Image (cartoon, rainbow, N blue to C red; front, side, top):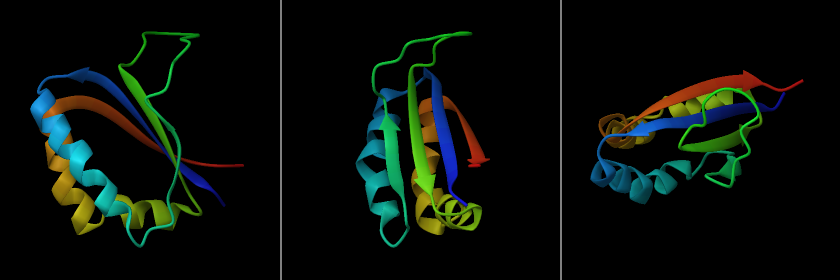
Length: 95
């Protein structure tokens, strides 16, 4: 069953750290069945406060999503995102 990780950037604290993250995150996708469905495109807020940005990533299964997210390669790179910003990341299974 398709599974999605939805990332919402709530606020930026250190753009230089985010730049490092963005320059390295693409390499973590190698060998993983990942499909980026949305990445920081225009938003129309329907409810609540607007995040700074939204990314939606599709995987063929929860196991595949966790394999990428929990991989040593991604965990090394994500440290820069944690230093640079406040995000929410939610894994949700499709129907």
